[in-house]
Each structure stands twice: as C-alpha cells, then as structure tokens.
Image 1: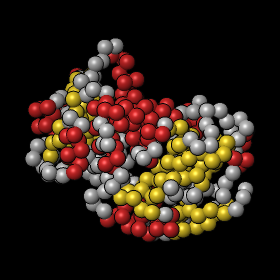
Image 2 (image 1 turned 180 degrees about the horizontal axis):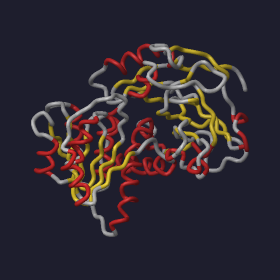
Image 3 (image 1 turned 90 degrees about the vertical axis):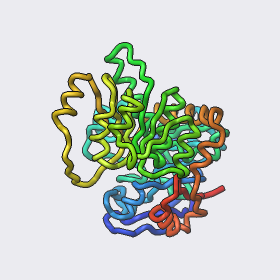
Length: 370
C-alpha cells in the first residue's frame, strides 16, 4: 500500500451519514494470485440504491470497518496490473462487476448473481467497499474492458446490464418452446433503466411500446421515440388497454418499482410470452388483483415470469457490444443520459442532494477525475 486516498462513505444503519473519508490507497498486491488490477476511478453513477443506502434502508460495512464506501456504477482507467493478468494493461478503460462470490455452488462457477446464499457481497452495497473513491483494486476476473469509443458513456454500462441479463435469460428459458420468435415487446417505466431497456430491445429489432406516467411532451418520451419506439401514457391508456391495441407482447421488461404494475403486466403478455421483473420493491403494498384470470391465462398460455438481479460477466461483455452498436445505430443517444455531472468527491453533499431532488435527472454521476 502506498499513501492515502479520498472516498465517499456512509455509516450503515445511520440515516444521512454520507461523508468524505480518507483510507489507504489499494494496490495490485492486495489481490491474491498475481491477478490484481489497480484502477483510477474517472466517473461513478449513483441511483436509487445509493439513495436508499444513505437513508439506512440497507447496506452493511465490510468486516473490520464501521463505514461502507458507496457507488456501484463504476468507470475508470487501469493504472497497474499484476504479473498474471492477461488482456488488461495500463491505459485501458474498464468497468467492474458489482457482486462477488459467496459460498454456494453458483458462486463457485462464477454465477454469483444467481447465488442461493442469504448473505451476498456487492461492492458499494453490501459487505464490500464500492467505487466512489480515487482508486480501487480488484481481481481481473471482475473487470471488463471497454473500447475508447465508449469513453464518454461507459459509466452507463452497469445499469445497462440489468436488462442485458434479463433479455438473455428470457431467451435461454424460451428454448423450451423450440421456435420462439418474439417480435413485440413492452417496457414498463421510462426512467434510466426503462430507457436503457427500450434501447436494448430496439437494438435486437423488437417493435417496442414503453409505458410511463408522465404526459407528453417530456424529454424521456422524446428519447424513446427517437429510437423508433412507442410511448404510451398510462394515465390516458391503461396497460391492459395498451396491450389490446399494440400487443399482446412476447416480452415485457418491468422497471417501475411498483408492484401494482407487475400484476397489470401479467395481463399484457402474449401466449408463450415472458415477463422479466427487475425492480426491487421493499414495501408491503396490498392490492386487489383478478387472481383467477391471471392464473388461467398463465396456464392456458404457457406464460413465464422471471426475476433477475445484478448481472454476470457475460452480461457486462454483451452490454459493451450493445453500447458500441448503439453508438453506431443511434449516434449521441447515450450521451443524452449524462444529465447531472457533479465535480469531485468532495462535493458528496451536492451529489446526494441532486440524486434526491433533481426530478428531471436521467443519470446523476460523480466526475471523480479527468
């Protein structure tokens, strides 16, 4: 270890405890097997997870520390690599995976996002320090290289992977149908993840309908329509009515954080269709649902609903390919997500304030370094 570095951390369990701290700068030798990679952090995106950790809704410090360095949406540049690292070298742009292996069989084969452990390890979220720091070191297995063309938008890779994984898993599951050729898709929600989900589906050639509450005109609706997707306002047209008009949908991606929308979405999928759930709902909302009708339609229609959390290396690598394709197919589209840059770790107060109050933000992010 050489010297100290700055980082943004919270005291887990203590609401509103975000603060600037100093801690030892990591090094490649901290990682066993000669597989260490030292990364200088350039940008880190923040989202609802960071807001909820600062509100003490969840999150735990790594063993031996009373603080947790936050930030899980990383983008940086390699500064040094260990002797057994192949395929990464100083100067490469990189993004790090979020989850780290636990003890289950899935963790042992590199599928830690499918772990069956009750305790999970996620950098910047639970039991492992995150990326809102000047540097981080990690095993090369958890670091993905990006081409220079993504230098400006690479910080969006981690949120993009949420549905890169969801779509991949839907297609894997649907191999059970032998000839599944989905054409119509829907996205529930037009926030950051909903926008990225719409992009992912358009890159795969789907006819896409994105459902959202905000009336037009609004910037997110314009972005969705610039992709050739349809924007439907749910206060004017219900999800069930929208599905009757524009669907039914072979694939539905749910990203609203509203469990009521989940049950409406179950009515919108076509026979042999898939509903992919990716939003974490922490409340105890109770609603009335047409349970018999939903069950009957699922049984008679061979329908599938699957949950997806986090993402694997495979999904990060697919996300890189998708984002390169997006830069070619929809030039400048991803750049429009970078709405709220906050300069420097020392402006952590402004970072969290913006995250909480900026209603028009697509992506709030910290410019850690140039």
